[in-house]
Length: 300
Image 1 (tube, rainbow, N blue to C red):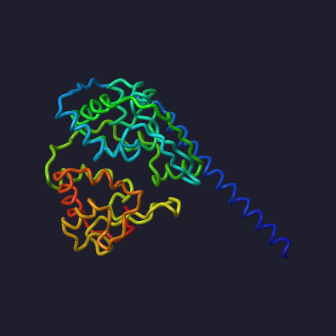
Image 2 (tube, rainbow, N blue to C red):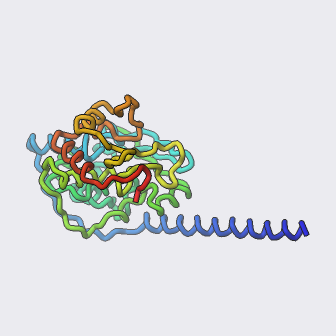
Image 3 (cartoon, one colour):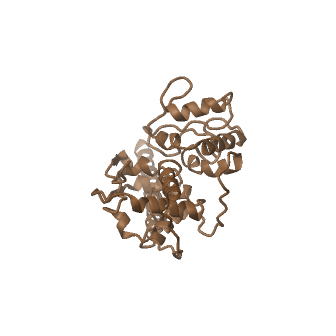
């Protein structure tokens, strides 16, 4: 009898393993197909200005809303190694004229920034173009103009190695590696002029949703490794920002510390938040105040 039971248990276990293998294979294949797909997005002419106001705007965007310096570094030479454990390994590429920047025309850079599509038509990976898709033409042009003025710095061309686990997590939207498929390339450009109100704040807060979820209620990122920080609740719930004032929020951004004195996790782009101007910061706060309160972890 026990031999028969063991036999059927082994058969069942084999079936589970085979099903899991098929599941992983199907999603890895879907990821590979998506990341090698050619996106037929036409290049659009873009006019650059190199006056002080435009260059200052480009610098501001790179350091704040664009979060460019968070990854590529202050000199944009890249080279930082991101060991992601079971998910793979990434070396941030050089984004100066001494690296990949020189390979791109202005129109190709604009498409990369707004659509997440590289020169060869395939998706860029991990770059948060989903957070830039709403930018008006003048902001995209300002960022490109500022990048063109940066000195050419020798640096690493970059490495991107991800495992099957990372590919499966991408397909489940736990880790947004495949960028272009997440952007509505036909969406009209509807960015409002910068203003300290919740409407503009909803655009400024686009990048927050990547980690804190669609509802901004935070909580563990589904499928993420346990050593990745748990995003905080940004809604007015008791587990989030209930009872906070704008001054509390501004202090958090400027100091990188919570009200209890605990530092924010390094995973949080503190430097980019700190670089926001008063209009952007007030707009983001007003938007967060307008979001319905949700308990921590109610991400969708």
